[in-house]
Amino acid sequence: MTCLPSSTQKKLGLVIDLDTCVGCHGCVTACKGWNTQNYGVPLSDLDPPYGADPQGTFLNRVFSYEVQPEGKAAQTVHFPKSCLHCEDAPCVTVCPPTGASYKREEDGIVLVNEDRCIGCGLCAWSCAYGARELDRDAGGVMKKCTLCVDRIYNENLPEEDRVPACVRTCPPAGARHFGDLGDPNSDVSKLVAERGGFDLMPEQGTKPVNKYLPPRPPKDEMEVPALKPVATEAKGFLGGWLDKALEKI
Image (cartoon, rainbow, N blue to C red; front, side, top):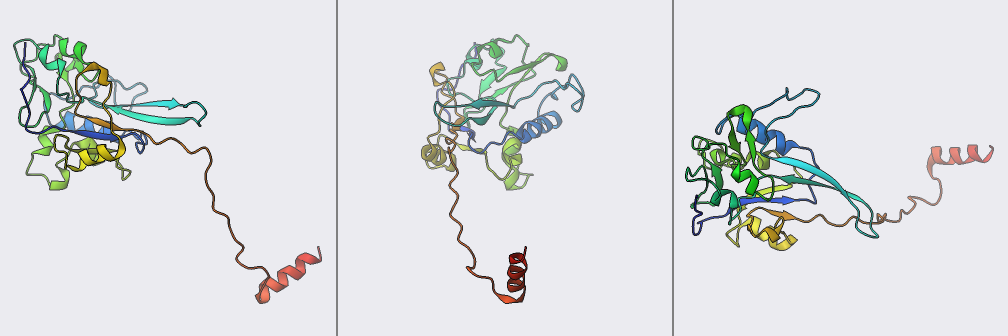
């Protein structure tokens, strides 16, 4: 079986803000586009993307749920999900000696060597998050989020583009953030500390690198400031004439 590195120099990953995600699926389409045209085997589409029932392989998906805490108003939570690049990644340790699934020592990114993948599916079965998809239409290759490893180190791109495609495409609301979660002084680590970021399904013991920021509870009532009248009596020709006209009605 494939072994994990004893430690990694960095822990590159995503921080996803469930409070600001609007469920636009921009991250889904950006991920699909980039990973179909660039890294590895293209992601297949079993039906035309704009057909009545489009299906295919996606590395990032957004799920929407309606939640209603007891005594509170209902709210919709949009929940993006992809590979969490776990520190203790079972998808790596169950991989046969081919070493197709592996975790990089230099940055902690979990990848699949598609030339070595035999399509056994063990890694997908071991993933507690359902973050891997076997692309049978592409020859039985296992696909997963790569954190756009071919973007983040690409010096031919402008510096602002050296982030995962999903992060670059996220609207100005800023629901997706990228950085080194192994560095307590990084922007993403500070954000997690300030907002109470959490692991997805920590009971699995996989130590996911990606973190989620919780949605803020909805306000039961909106506070509307009291409006004061601009003037207490009509002034000017038009105001005086209108008042007199209305009095005769």
